[in-house]
Length: 72
Image (cartoon, rainbow, N blue to C red; front, side, top):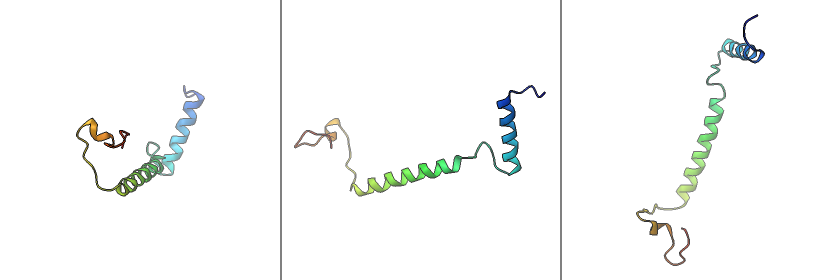
């Protein structure tokens, strides 16, 4: 008896297995998530670059089109 629950024993076994394969269990899966985040940031930056020069927003009036009154 180890004094652990079945889930705790399985978790410990998986952690040891990952370490045997020299994989840090705390960082496992982090890189694929970071790649997805980088892809989203890159896509946002590309879309933002296509919008043209930045317009400074200094008041709430800058958020709306002067002619139509609709949000820009």
